[in-house]
Image: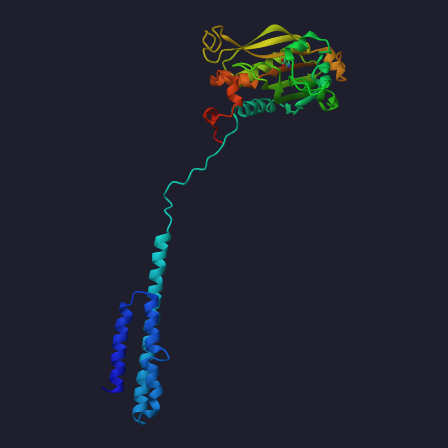
Length: 348
Ligand code: DAH
């Protein structure tokens, strides 16, 4: 066989192998074996000096041509194999974006927080400011400034946890009234505030008593504030909280810091007043205490009661939530049992 014929045979075989090869590794092996330094083509080109002057250009041209052809064929095959490898990898690692995602467990605001924020929103809408008080309070603000001097019998209703003779954890949110009144600048207009927060009493815990619970205090002081303003305000609040059809009624009561004082009932949101288990078959639900701010309370906060008057109220959001959601034990709010709390999930 002539050298030329051998080269042509090599070309044909190698082209076949290149076409059949399945991996880049094998392809590289073919390249090294045929085109490499120790491969047959290099060998032919190296042996040119032994050829006759007539043969040299023919064989040389043929060898170069075949080397270029095979180099090109290997490159082309390499591109194809690389693409195949890439496609296989993409297929392997592909994401199915139609699969449902993994749900992250998400918490929710506590039901009492939700109720308090709802009430805050009602009053913010009526131009009130939301004020935060202190949970650790002095006897002075908690009692004395609310018209409950040291020996006052009404203190018995609010026995609590004392830190010292003068410091305690507050029994009600009413001390925020005194703290806000003494700071208010009436030249800038009326004082309208609510103050939500925790309060504490030395109660024996049962279904309707907890040593820690919540109150929302309300206070308006201005010139010519009347009982009519109190009634109108409470009616708006109750309609927003329990439905537009609600009515309220006021009954005489007693609090040391208001005069006159009232107990406020709302018509039952469940039966509409006909009588049911929620309203204990009376048609009315007792919902809060309120009254006209006692002149002495105004005076102690540096406000002239002959010029200014005000109304105040104290509401229990725990009780509101119990009534509204049919919760029959207040302790549920404080036990952090997710089976209970998860029933009040809001969409944030
Ligand atoms: N502080 C009272 C209590 O804890 C509730 C209360 C009643 C607050 C009447 C008021 C009010 O502002 O006017 O029992």
